[in-house]
Length: 495
Image (cartoon, rainbow, N blue to C red):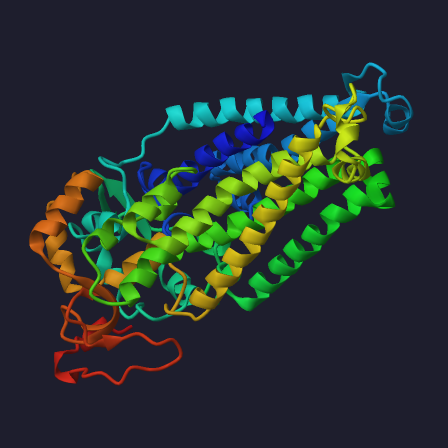
């Protein structure tokens, strides 16, 4: 339980570091290139590859935070399960159930656990040092589409996103990668006075973002392997508990914990994708309330998100968030089950009632679980895995179709969706408002919003987020035959 809690605390820290890193880079003296700030995706990138990408971009806070979080989430629970050993061994306990039992620390695994915790502590100190020495450039917590719109309305940054509303990440990267931007007084602005160097020109030739408009865990190639893994793991639990395969957990009880951690990491990817896409999915349904513009599930900490989603009436988000909480419990349950002999409890369940009056039958003397606690743990673990498979299937069936031209996983992707929106005028003078203040401001306007095709401020048809009424809905793969007005086109903007 302690190791799981430790990992959760690191996850909360890592979430905030990743979310705010781009703003830290933009607030530096001289700003930052788009390729190392607004074009960077730390939301959907693989956790084990993220530190390498961060080091390449010299984002040291993200690098140390990602390394520490990966160690705290995966290795600490695994080493913790292997470090504490019940003595004597299982064969002796079965032969002499009344013999005194003690918990000992395994020499090798305990040292690996201590070393991992020391590494996490060291990186935690480094992270604190980095964060204390730099500024964010923010006057309020940036949340949702509204937060970015309030920062972009003051300057001319939206001009750079002309004709980028339906293009891919590679096209956005190709156009913006060498442009420099700054963040001052909660306002994003282009910095044309500091041109890029020749070294920077060669450094950011390629991009690493997915060209698929839909996140992996919401697609078949992400859903199917994960659900198959859940089913296999669900079948593996009774095998190692009630058959001769229990020798696996006898020799290496940490294997079960490691598999549970893998299941948890996969579910974390599903939750991350749902957090990112949910506001845009709501907007795609048209006529959404103004609260959708301030909705940002990626900024909500672990444990708080599912309850907020429930209050918002977003049932699917609640189910996914609640599943994340249960995956942490799953690790604890399976760690305890890996130390017992399931056949002993199976025999005890079918003993004649009169046998249960024996002095030694308050529990099973050959392990760490009582009869009641074993069956409760086993039942809960089975329920959690079935729950995860069911919810993952519902999510796939409800969210498998792309409804955006690209994933909204970078600041530039968000800005491209609103660069011609008429609603941008509503955000003048709102950069210093808190999230609650922004909600009150937008609700006072009484407008509704949607995602689709709309007539922009230039008189042309664009795709993105704007106030209703829109011209039409966005359907991925279908070109909208709108009412573009060539006589309104500023041809001098084309290069």
